[in-house]
Image 1 (cartoon, chains in turn blue, orange):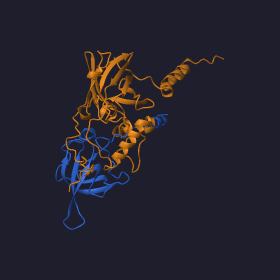
Image 2: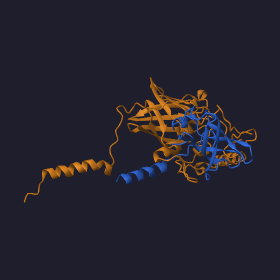
Image 3: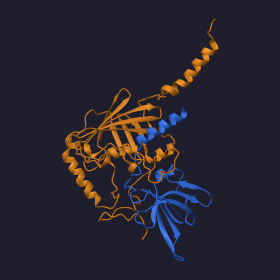
Image 4: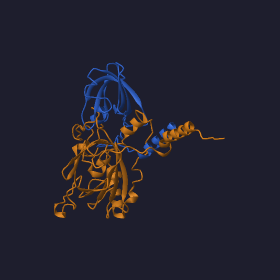
Length: 126
Length: 261
């Protein structure tokens, strides 16, 4: 019975859901059919509206090369309700980040989850 | 032989009473005062809220959730406004994907934005303070008529008057800007008329049944029910689209995608 109720509840939710990634623009520039990991060092967490940005320095293909990636997420409003605050990422933190990359191949993307070396994980959603 | 067995009857009745709510649906608890919407409310159907209910952190690659506005389509527009829709869509297609100016969302989209709002009751008025761009709606309960035409300047959230029909708060709004689209990017005229019927469905949930009409732009009313849940432990934060908009399109409508050059 509970299983049936749960299934009906989920079905009802799926019928009602709204795509509200929308804010001032869509996230259409990101390839949501592709997930990729990047690994690097946090340069800066820009904790502000309309969207949070994490600047991550990632070793490039050539010796000594460093590429700065710009990773966009939700607003501080949404992220703060998912366990984030302005201090969770500091310059120098080593991170692994799961992203939807930019469709145009530039070093940017939309972050989904951020793993720190202390084992803590910060998710965009949930 | 007497087959009446009181303990057995009590057991069967008790079991039935326990299971009945599962079979027929339990009557939800209602608030002590159904005319009091004080508190903080959140749109239940945002992507973030839905993923939380599903226990998921993200959608699978390529996965999408069915949109509640999926049935809202340009077919609802009159010929004149369908032509406007097509022209606006073609103009927008010249810009980079997803490019849009920072602008207040307007009443219809304000109702479905992914941010909470607070409702306050004061004498003759209900005030709704939104996290979205710090928008404010004032619902006048002490007026039965809209502002006269000469004072009804078109605005993002319009002129709203309200009254009670039983436990239902009925809000009637006119005076809305024509340049802010409806859901689904549908254009509309200044004749847009929005009627909302807000009521509790249980102590922590309200429904806003919205009916949008426009005799010039819409062939038929656009209807939608928006579900809000009470969030007593949330605080309303500030949200401004203009604070650090690294993805603002340039003069040609190109987006930098926020990438450092």
